[in-house]
Every structure is written in C-alpha cells, then in structure tokens.
Length: 326
Image (tube, rainbow, N blue to C red; front, side, top):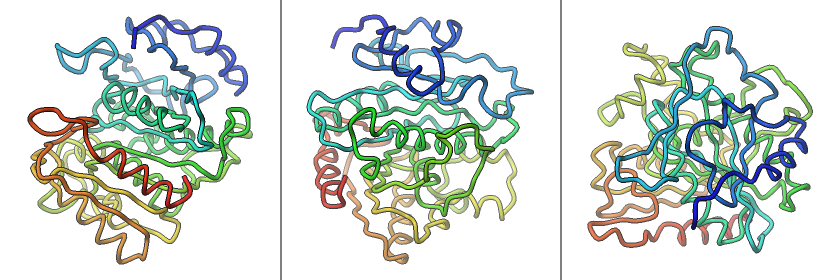
C-alpha cells in the first residue's frame, strides 16, 4: 500500500463527530504520515488527565533501521490517540488493537497498522490505541495506560452507530505489554480510573472477546518480563503490588472469552505467561483457547518461523471470535 499523506478532511469529520476537534499541528508533526486509509483522532478533549508535571516530548521513529516508513514506534506519548481503519465490506463488528513495547514505547506499525489491515480484510472496523506510558510523569502513574484503554473502549462503543458496527460486538486484542494492558482492561472487574469528562465516559467497560498475543501477564515469579515490570511498577515493587498487577490473579466473572497465542521458543516473554493465564481462565470457567507454536520467538506479528511464513493465528482467532459472536 502506498504511503500518502493524511486525509485531513477525514480527520476533521471523525474528530468533529466526537466533539474532540482536530489534533494540533505539533501532535501531528512527527515526520511520519498516517498511512493511507487510516484516520487518527485524540482520545481526550485537550490534554490527557494528570498532565500537570509531564515534561517529556513525544517521539516517533522507525522500529528498526530497515523498517518501512509505516513500521514505527512512539515513545513518551503525550497525545494518546485512536487510529481507525474502515473495512471495505463491514461485518458489523469492531476490534480495539493494543500494540506492545514493554511499557517503554508503543510499536504502532507492526502490531498496529499491519494487524488492522489484516482484520479489516475480514470485515472488522479496527481501532489502534496509542497509549501513555507509566514512567513519564503522569499523575496516575501506573494507571495512565489503563485510563487510555478505558477511554478508548468507551469511545469505540460510542462510535458504533455512526460507523455502522454493533456496540455489542467489540473485541480487544493486545500484543506483549499491550497484551498485559488488554488483559487489565478486559479481565479485571471494571474500576473507574479517571473522572468522567463527557457522554463518552458513560459507556460501559465491556468487551465480547479478548485476544492476548504473546502477552506479559505475570509481575512476580521466575517468568517475569523484567523490563515491563520496571516501567510499570518501578525497580523495587512490593510483593502486594506485583500480585495486584499480575493479570492471572485478576480473572473475574466479567472476563470475556479469551484467545491466547504464544511461541514456545519466546525468550523475551516466556510462554509460561500464557499458560498461567490459561490456567486462571479455566479455573474461572471462562471460555478460552490457547495456541502454542513451536517456533516464532517474541513479537512474531503476522509472520512466523525462519522463513517468515504467514502466521496461522489470525484464522484461528477469527473462528474463535465468530463462535463468540464477534
């Protein structure tokens, strides 16, 4: 797909429809245009909550030196956003996609644009979440990413009628640390994390299906991804805090049917993270499906193995989602 500039009119229409206004020039002036067909708009009216002491400057760069122009990451996010891709042939459902990055950055290309294109082909209206990071000075600290995830889910549901999908057919999919945030959003009993700002915040925090892709789950024990834990909880978190933010400890009655996929040879986030989450889902009688692949390493996205063959998990997830009404 060619990389053309941002469709300014589409952004104006989308943002004005939400009452949010067009993003300011500094927020858009990253040097990397939004890929053709995507529309980006801010999550919050004005500044994000608790920004009084935030001094970081938002950055965007290529994920690797060899990455194509749309395979980028963001760091020090100060303007959290949703980036929407409409399907050519809608199936009446939507997906909220949460890329990973170890809670230190957000890899919006590989685990955002590419995934959205794949699921838009299957008919889903896709929304990519660019969320704030916990160590950047936000008043909410650890909770800042969850504030954005909650606001994003409510915004997606609020847009359902306008965009032509069913507000009761919404899935959430997260990758790596984004998988932790997706589990945090969907598995734990809802807890309000910010003061309501407008009618969007009256929308319920409910999802119909969740997908956790090579997710960070545990914050304690021998299979922790230390980088994610440090960014989220600091260098020396207490035992109680580690337990609270271990998502396998937070499965609740409200947890939706959950799909997991992980490579057994993942040396970054050990497969035991998915296995522990699966065990908790089963103990809670939550419908679940888990696919473990022999090879793939960490962050495999849409390709797997030494020959970078197309990954099988999208078709497996689509079948799972269909069974559960999404």
